[in-house]
Amino acid sequence: MSEFVLYNAPQSTCSQRVRFVLHAKKLAFEEHKLDLFAGDQLKQDYLAINPNGVVPALLHQGKTVLDSSVIVEYLDEVKSAVHSFTPTDPVERARMRWMMRYIDEIPAPAIRVPSYNLAFLPHFKTMSEEEFNALANSKPLRKEFLLTMGRSGFPKKEMDEALDRLHRSIVRMDEWIAQSGGPWLMGSSISLADIAIMPVIVRMNDINLDTAWADKPAVSKWFELIQAHPSFKPTYYTGSLLTEKYPHLAALRKEKSHA
Ligand SMILES: N[C@@H](CCC(=O)N[C@@H](CS)C(=O)NCC(=O)O)C(=O)O
Image 1 (cartoon, rainbow, N blue to C red):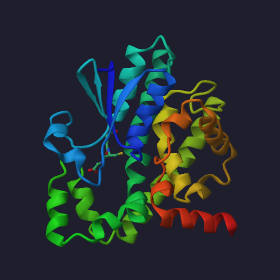
Image 2 (cartoon, rainbow, N blue to C red):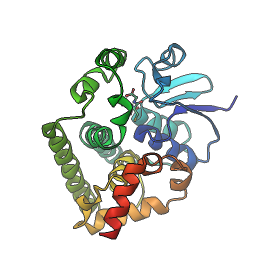
Image 3 (cartoon, rainbow, N blue to C red):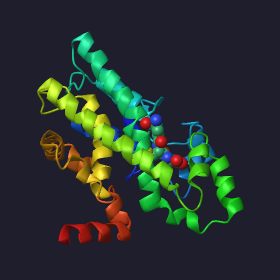
């Protein structure tokens, strides 16, 4: 058994944070890919690892570490010698954690709304109301989320609010880069805060929401830099983007590039 075992899903934004850090630290890991639409995350054997029924979950020498933000901090702590993503100054460290809390509170939940409405909805449309309600009720963390979405998608109000939160997050990102002098959120070195927001930016780009930073060159530069990082490609292996799995999204993207 590897020192590290990762339970995750290719397209899961939370999982992508953890894969990036594992690759950056050159840590070999046994990868278990869960099919979230087949309900692998709600099976008893997985719930015994993560009672919240969500990915990712990391096992380190058989011990469980849960929640993507916690996992990336844990990896940075136990493997600090390899490459540290955490500032040494306690005040800077606190600032990084504050940024991560903001990211977990505003853009990370907000990106789920357009992701579900634009890509995942067909998985639910064919269900009967009873089947859908049973599924929602079986989700320890996402019951209310699913019930608000319903089988026909989030109403316009929810969608508009989520898009507004995403736009505000891009403004905030731009401010952080300006305050630190860039090119990363905290200055000249990439930190866990950059890795925490990365999947939101990749997803926004994937589903045609990249116009949010059309007038923000510092954010565009940040995105180019993180895509050029050696850990980016192995993290986003084929099948990690929504456009790779959902042809209707890829078609939208193509239309846009030809417009
Ligand atoms: N705060 C948790 C959230 C985990 C989470 O929401 N994971 C999503 C994928 S990004 C999931 O497993 N969803 C499955 C479901 O909704 O049933 C973390 O960061 O690890």
